[in-house]
Length: 189
Image (cartoon, rainbow, N blue to C red):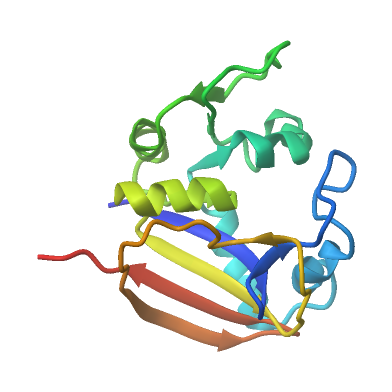
C-alpha cells in the first residue's frame, strides 16, 4: 500500500528556506544551501534517497510551493499527477494535464494515493505538511538535515497545533553534507 511521505531538506535550526522567499527567489536568500547535497557530488545513500523521490507515483503540494517552483512546468517528474492544495484556483489557471487543484488536504491525499497506485505519494510544502499532520493523513517524514544554522526564513513546523505527535525513526543515514532521517508518524490505537 502506498504511503504519503514528506520529503524536505531542512537546516538544523528548522528552516526549509532562507528569508525573503518570493517568485524568482523560491528558496529565499541563501536557501540553495539546503539543496546542495543533491546538486553536487552525491554519496550512495544520497542517490538512494533521490531514487525514492523519483519512484513516487503522485505529488501533493501547496499552492505557494507550486507557484514558487513555477509548477515544474506541469511535470514534477515522469509525468506523475500533481495535486495542488489551494482554497482558490489561480487566475489564470495553467492548463497542464495532470495538475489538479483540490481545496481539502484529506481529499488531495486520497486522490493522490488512488493515482499513485502502489507507489508512494510525494508531499511538498511546509503548510501542506502541517495540514496533513493535523488531519492525520501524513504517513512519513523524510527530513534531509543539513548541518547549517540559517537563523531565519521559512520554518517547517511553525504554528503547529498543540497536539503531541509521536514519530518512529525508520532510518538515519549520513550522506555528503546531509543526514537523511526517515520517520513514521505514529498513530494511536
